[in-house]
Amino acid sequence: MQNLEPDITTRISERQMRLWNVLHPAEHAKNSPYSFLTISRDEGTLGDEIAQALAQRLNWSVYDKEIVNYIANNSHVREDLVRQLDEKSQGLIHETILRLLRMLESSPFGSEEYHESLMHALAALATRGNAILVGRGANFALHWSEHGLHVRTTGSLQARVQRLSKSWQVAPDVARQRVLESDEETRTFIRHHFNQDFDDLSFYDLVFNTDRLSVNQVVTSVFSLLNQAFFSEN
Image: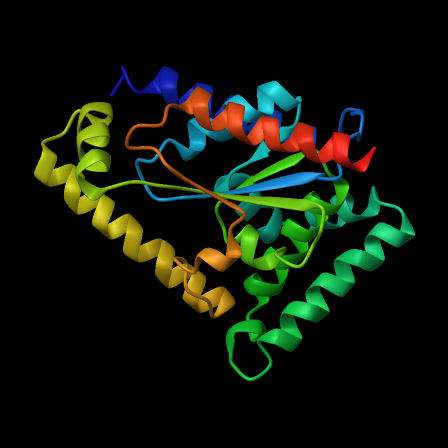
């Protein structure tokens, strides 16, 4: 148990630091027509590593599911985040919520308090910009925005199991079961909150199979596209 404590303490400290950055954003230059990225990933496809590497390259902030969930479930933090934005940006957030609720009005999805809070959290982070949103259906919530680039990482079950068996230090059959459970949880979450199919490729701008592509190769590709978009705008 003692061997786990430093790692847990480090994760908690890192999470607290990222939460502090949410409420005290640094000033970044907004040169690219894209102001946020979403990364959707299958378990074991290097999505988190890619997000962190892109954040360092772009000097942007990463918001994973723990951070997004915290904001969605904490009304004070969520209100502070929205309050930082100007009136125009706040209006865009409300427009996002209305779009989603209209899209889902024929189903029960939009009636849940968490669902609407999640939409507010994602919209606020994306509107503020310089954000990399990992998971939580951000690409579905924000697909209509011209300022977002939506990335998906995927891979074969065999490669994912092999990678995670080594990373988690568990037997391949244990890793395989965890991967399959994670896949089902992700798809259930997307169906429940967005009434969409996680594997519908029309909701992604870039799809990377990381069976053979490295983190650096994916990051370089995304960064290159962002640069091309900037120069084409100018």
